Length: 113
Length: 114
Image (cartoon, rainbow over all chains, first blue to last red; front, side, top):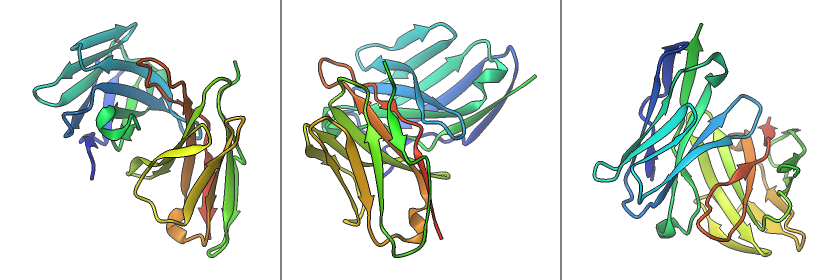
């Protein structure tokens, strides 16, 4: 039962442009959402998160938007840099699943020079 | 502060064998979770331990088990290995106070079953 979905397995973007990664969820009881970045042969590293009481959270080049009515969140990276090339995972958690993380399948981002 | 460490980093086993993976959480983190990552499947939750007790379990067969020690270190065991168990096994730790749900991951153990 995939409660968190990332429907785009890959994304290619030119350096300096905006990268937009999308994520959909099905469980309306999720109340906290996170984005992780993963390089090959390394564990995921936490990027940014957002609580369900907010609709936007910004941290430097990274901004996460949450649309609760649509059960949709997105991650914007501006401007994209070559070091941003990695796999990005969306995750959700909440009281409904006892605060374990449910992950999407990931989106591979390639930033072209 | 040292991060989450996992040992070993790489393992090669044959079908039918068993394997034990180890995870040391960040100092002060009492919750340890385990995940399996396979290509195209994202991270699948295995189980979570807190204060030496399993508090959450994913949809994996009983061949997958774990435990946590009093110092919060955790081990995961897989018995009667199958080819499909080949994956990256990730351990993550977190604090459990307040509204802080970020989990911090180790580098993972790459298990190959032949």
